[in-house]
Length: 421
Ligand code: HAM
Image (tube, rainbow, N blue to C red; front, side):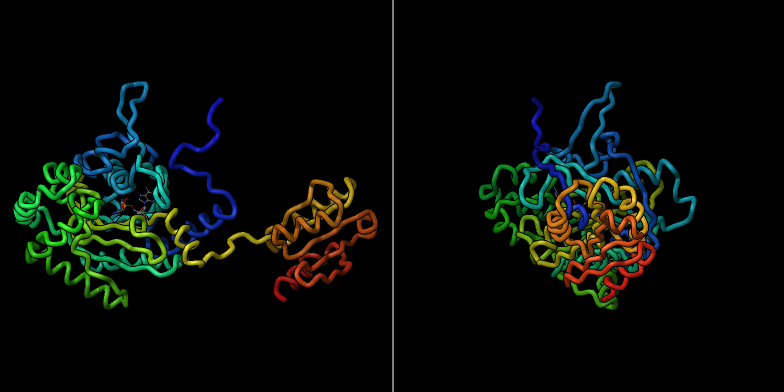
């Protein structure tokens, strides 16, 4: 028999967590739309080359984490591990720049990475992200960073820190990499095998190493910051000034390289104070000024971020900021089969006031009331044979225990009064 558990690293998100998930998604979408971002929905899988060419052949994601498969026509396809490359691909294939710049898009989508599952780290996770393409003004960087911050605040994730860095442009990195290589070569013996591999294939990726002993060695490594060209340095200074003007505090994080090769200039991460260090990134992003061209499109700069919904939900739990996203206003209880139809009609009207459910299990009244309370209903509406014949119902306030006979037509108004009381 098939294994009935969800595949390793995936999970079923059940009520009430699923309702918090939906509330987070709504709150973020509202913030994104108010800032002029419009929703884009791209396929869940893409041609494998899209990810290899954009994320980078030597990154952990491309070398170890992609869900790649060959379809029946022999095409190599990959379930999207991230949202930026597919959005760039969609902009190019639909020539979206023709509608004016910058192109401002957002997404809410599942991502797939073959990672070692642990708390806050899944093989399927969900991201809310924005991408702004076609402008390189530092004020746009600040706007994007602030929109992400606002979305996290609206979702109620508790205390968070904004980390900021600049990766410079490829030219700045070309000056930096020999210095980094020289440092790594001098410390080669102290590095673990994985870090040595990174050192050969793509030295910047050594900063992604998780081994504490490697991290200790890297504290003395030369920093990219010292190699930024004048234009990149000025851009970075201006981003910081705009953030200060917006009242957003941030910490400089010169070792924040992030796990993608497409980043240039501004990179940032939002870290939760409530989550453990290995999974405390609630979201992250940055500029990717060469990516569109690399994918065969026009040379348009871009910047964006992705927020991890699974981690936002976890942060709500750890920071104890959970707000109940689903509330039952009324629980309608027909006492016999004869009242089912009337109960359904009454419920339909009460739904004007909020979530309303009908009891369909023919429990004893006391059991039905206990169930209504367990479900957190604010009121119970009881309809038995005498109520049906008389055209009224018994309305019970489940908080105070008060109950009254109420004509059926008056029920929505009376329920409304209880809600406001
Ligand atoms: P990322 O940092 O790889 O960036 O992912 C964004 C966020 O998704 C992370 O900060 C984290 O909250 C969440 N996340 C990532 N992997 C997992 C996982 N295995 N389990 C749970 N949550 C996870 C990107 O993907 C970039 N595309 C963001 C971006 C957009 N940069 C520019 N535009």
